[in-house]
Amino acid sequence: MSTPLDEDGDVAQEYDRLPDSFRRTRHGIELRLPQWEGSVLIELVRQMDRMLEPPPVDDPLEALVGLRDTAPPPPEDPALARLLPDPYPEDPMASGDFRRRRTDDALAHKRAAARRVLATVPGPGEVLLLDEEVAQDWLTTLNDLRLVFGTRLGITDDDYLDELGTLPPDDRRLPVIEMYELLTILVDNLIRTLD
Image 1: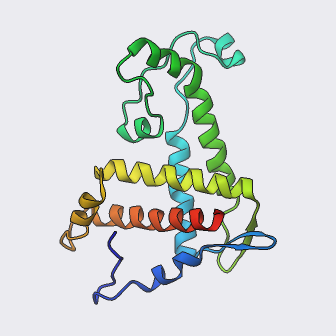
Image 2: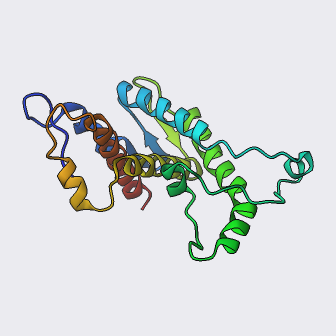
């Protein structure tokens, strides 16, 4: 993974603090974010929450019971399809049955995690203490965001990411790459903190 650089080619200062965003203490996991990072994460998580809205249910009884009679179609958005992988790509019947039984639950789980993350994004200068369950919500949500960005960039392996790191400074993908790298750093930091 390439390291973010500022305009002078030096390592961007705001990234110096990222490895310390999550830190285990005897009381739980401390979360501390620079203001710009918290603001960006709030907006990204809100966008993902909207993306995770379940497909509509026409039958009120199905909506009440929480089990669809017919399977929703596979996601058209490749990023959403990445978050809801098809476990039976060679068997359309099994895939449909899986989507019918599991799509709404999977989306509800991811949305609930994202909303708990939104409720725990620290303000400027704040340090929040997360318990293990909320830390897992952060891991789920950060990783889902990372998968969305990776899908949008077409990242399939580390070699492709290295190639993206050599793009000219006016390439329109650079802000997306920077967000992908930020999310990668945060996920890695949280995984190490949870171990």
